[in-house]
Image (cartoon, rainbow, N blue to C red; front, top):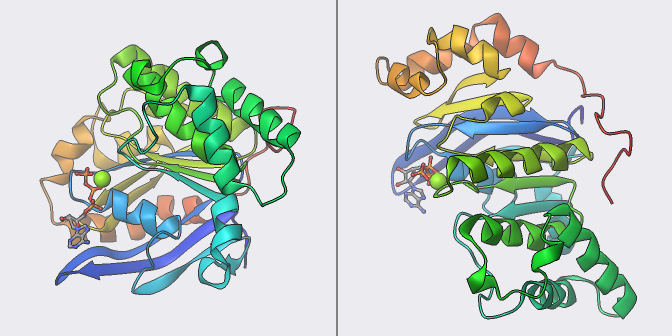
Length: 279
Ligand SMILES: Nc1ncnc2c1ncn2[C@@H]1O[C@H](COP(=O)(O)OP(=O)(O)OP(=O)(O)O)[C@@H](O)[C@H]1O
Ligand SMILES: [Mg+2]
């Protein structure tokens, strides 16, 4: 019970007669950075939305500190778990600092002091490394900076778990790398971080890789181990390998491998950063 910070157990989710998630089990420890890969339409966004408590699975459950998300009220859930969706949702006319202040006023409890708001905004600007752009209107930020601004909104409440849906899509390789390093850092500070991506360039930064195909978990484990598991020399080739077999066969192959067991039983990760939990 409750070995993981956040744990999804046997998630099943169907819509319009389609099985979108076909029984996915995965845990996330504090301080871990996981990368979720899979072909388009394989259920990545759906898995993140279920794990973040945005949608409820038809079967299975998600536990935070060993307690089902469904038992928590929306406010405590929103504080503990952040989700950065693929599309930017923040007001683009506002200056970055004003947007963060505005979001903080909306999200923080009534009666939060002005000083607390300002210090939360300062903390976030530093975390997303955009202090020098605080006075810039969001529409004038670069694509990568805008994505970081969206992350900043979610970081305001200092969530312990952060999910991101394709934060690097449309970014050049350099920005992709910078963004993935930032996620690595956010995890090192003590958060559990899980992101989807279509780029495999930075997967080595992750503690683990998840591969989903047609709603099945085809792999969970260290990035290097995935190469062996799929018999490929490069992470990009995993997508090609997946086309060669049935999703259920890939799922069975993984479930029956010793990798599945050692991944499920892995212990908490010693925090890399000396500072411990992020505040
Ligand atoms: N509300 C819904 N109703 C019906 N089908 C849905 C719904 N949401 C998702 N789907 C279907 O479920 C499947 C998985 O969708 P999902 O968005 O989770 O995939 P994805 O892996 O994130 O894809 P992409 O890489 O393109 O973002 C797709 O076939 C999609 O059409
Ligand atoms: Mg998606």
